[in-house]
Amino acid sequence: MKKVLFAASEAHPLAKTGGLGEVCGALPLALQQCGHDVRVALPGYRTVLEQCGNVRVLAQLTVPGSLEPVRILETTLGRSTVPALIVDAPGMFDRAGGLYVDVDGRDYTDNANRFTVYCRAVVELAMDRGALYWQPDVVHCHDWQTGLVPALLARAPVRPGTVFTIHNIAYAGSFDRERFDSLHLPADLYTPESMEFYGRFAFIKGGLVYSDLITTVSPTYAREIRTPEKGCGLEGLLQHRSQDLVGIINGVNYALWDPAVDPVIAERYDAGTLENKRWNRRALQQDLGLREDEDALLIGVVSRLAYQKGMDLLPAALAPLWTQGVQLALLGSGDPRLQSEIEQTCREHPGRCAAYFGYNDTLAHRILAGADVFLMPSRYEPCGLGQLYAQRYGTVPVVRRTGGLADTVVPVNASTLAAGTATGVMYEDDSVEALSAAVLAAMYLRRAPAQWRQLQIAGMRRDFSWGESARAYAEVYRQARERRR
Image (tube, rainbow, N blue to C red):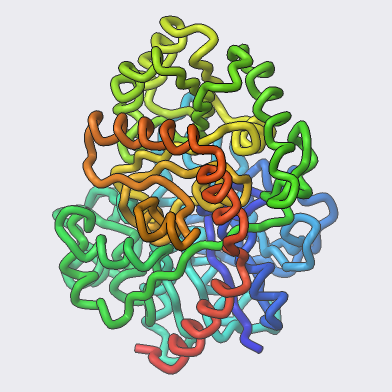
């Protein structure tokens, strides 16, 4: 058994904006089920405090950068038995906006200060200076918000091992020199060998330079980020540390994402009752005002509206296909310009195109259950969760070959169809034409019902549960303790 302290800026169900929160909510539970002693340190956002109910005050810390004492509160991660240690610094985290942005959707101007206070508190916990009488063997840090933790722990002569996970290297947590000076950190952190990054201070470099091992969320993404095309300027550092970089696929919590037990879909089903999926298709069409057209290829999209996700290609890629019988059910939010373009597409194709802007967890489940295909035209995708969920729901993924999409979807070709292993349509080029052709290929496949059902069942039988990933992380923790740098 290992003692593991998770440092994460979000973890479901207490705080979540995306995949990071889902992973940091599910992986600690999977590790606990494997026999490890795991605790999760989270910032005390207002939304977290509102969900906590009864909490126990474990400690009160004096943390540089906070004008008030920082309390460590103990609760659990939702209904699980995983302890959650809440870093309660009201001046930094008890706010009306989101986790990282204000009520107007703009980044908080003091995000560097906020997460420096959080990281310093995590270091106190990691060194057992918080009166917990518990010291982890390993501190597992996630994304830029925690990058200072390995950097500060590295200064201790005796310390836990450190692991840093990159969920999306495009977000570096980069701030100017003036902001760095205001944080009152050791001056030697602002050097090219440390955390200086092209004349700025990048939190992510703390994790990349100082952690004992680095992980990311798929093997293909681990290779991609060592190239100039996908490395966001950090490829040289990652190439230098390539022997310490491991790609581990994210898992799925099938208690939440499985049509056999899903409480919010119109009709439950599994691989043996796949015919029930049609009732979910009909319910989705009714919910969104789409025509009840049995022959249409119903495309589902649940995504951020962002360049990374390839959403700017969608209107033009579907333009030649509306007359051939496609329908689109989209759930997403993000770039206002992309939202406006999709709204215009919906107006031009009533009954064929419907969109809900924002986030609606129930609708996300219903799209997965009701759609024929799940579209992910990402330009890069560290892991992706949508394609994992879609396969369990018998909704055929149509994806671009990149990152975790390449690792988790078995593409349709002559050999995989003959072997019965194909689970989705995969294409190469980042272009309107390639995306349109991939959707058209899915349309033709659906017109062969036996072949289509084979695709669906092959996907539904794949197992992306967290157990295997948790065992891989346990091995990383063992190596991190041995490799303490």
